[in-house]
Length: 276
Image 1: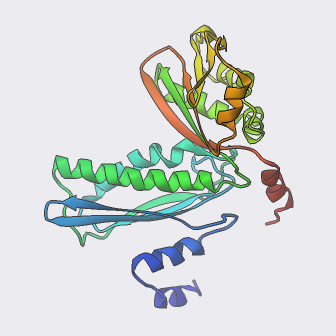
Image 2 (image 1 turned 135 degrees about the vertical axis):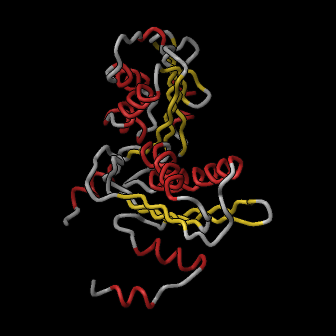
Image 3 (image 1 turned 180 degrees about the vertical axis):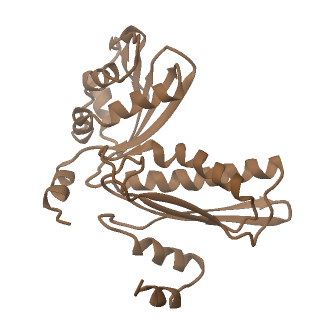
């Protein structure tokens, strides 16, 4: 409470103020994280700005992560609340650095009501898409700045019976220490990925239907190594800083995407040497 007067006296506006706020909430982060969109609403404009903080102890449920998003839109509170929950579910709740959670994370969305009204179905759709862009960019920035991270990994799970099933598979792979260390080593170890898929909490699972693609390379088909796969091709994709792993279950029509990072020597050092 003692610092509030000084904080209030230093309030500013514009990009510089958002930059300063982003820097003020960092812990083990290496850089501030921000996102902004401008949306046309007829002859008026709506702005959505946001900052986030997080680098380790990240698997929102939520985890040691903070996000503050503000808009000048004039929008009813119940609708704003519903859009916040919807967009968070497909952004911050789809990231993981290490699978650890804590009690002190939050994502806040504030509307000042000084800008254009958001009332029609078309306006709500435009606002929803803009808000999702901001939330996703802020969430992905946390993964890109994950403690010790050298890889930004997109895990897409397709043809699941439900979105929850797809998320279960994606997070099981994302939390596997063997998968994460293979990513750090640029080792296209398809067996580690397939093993994680197989132990996900999915009932009546048929591994013979599973295919796994690493970028544009088919790793696994019919539950085993793909016939045309080569180590050279796999290593080429794994050496990149941004990697997409697509897992197709062959069970249904639902899908989900999770973003994660690798597990490096630096992650161990940061957390072994950290003292609160």
